[in-house]
Length: 110
Image 1 (cartoon, rainbow, N blue to C red):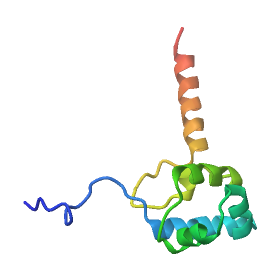
Image 2: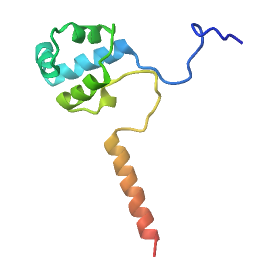
Image 3: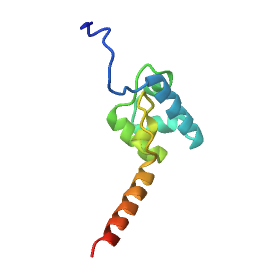
Image 4: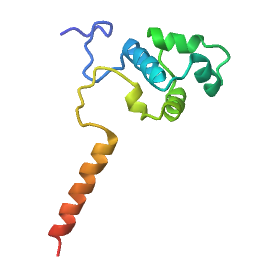
């Protein structure tokens, strides 16, 4: 068994920085937001950090992801791209499923 941490395969999902950056750029384009507008909204001194996200050299901090989700009107999870294989749908769909389940349970009770 290989115990070298540099070659060890991870079993948990990872964020793909390049795909995440392309996704953020795509959503910004859909919302017709410029890099300058995002820079000002986030209070960044320069736009370089945003371009680093686009290229996959870095990803936004959790605070920036949270702020971007507000600006772009999408859940934080919708900004990120990675190796996760979750196919449960949107948070709204999950809430709908829980509501349906709750109603079914309620009707079964006396």
